[in-house]
Length: 232
Image (cartoon, rainbow, N blue to C red; front, side, top):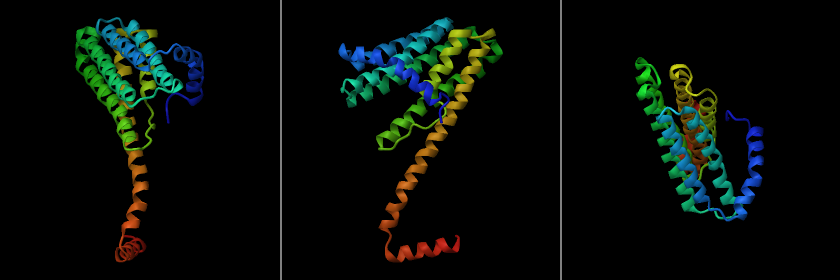
């Protein structure tokens, strides 16, 4: 389950299709797009850090669009590479870390009242760590040959959930809106991590059982069936 409905995702992707086609025809490198997108995301972190929250929100949204483009350009241009996937994943983590570091600086530098600095920083730290873990869980699962796209808050939701309120409302009165958004993202990201762990556990357990059954000796298989019938 995702907070962004599938029709909205598909509609936005359809809007990007002409741009993807033009970039592909022009021979634009997906890695170049990844680099530009990460640079903009780092810029968003800097903007938050110097209290330019609306600019930070705008840059965050722009980086999200570019993040959608690089993968599609790679696929449309038939230039998907292992290094490209590694490069994209690595720079995403760098950009996201810079973003939340900037938000943390904003809170420390007076973005929220003094008594709320520590809670705001804790929320920012949890949001960062949980967000990185969400991405790592998918990458690790896919490295094991497993599908793991489940979760209520994925990267797109984090970008929209933080970028749109920041662009429209800035940090809100005394920074409380931004702190609340970060706190909500932190909680939902933790939930997403749990969802992915449960999902991988479920599908690996399903795959593992037939293998175990095939390797049982006749005696062990008989004992196993007896235990199953006894309800132990």
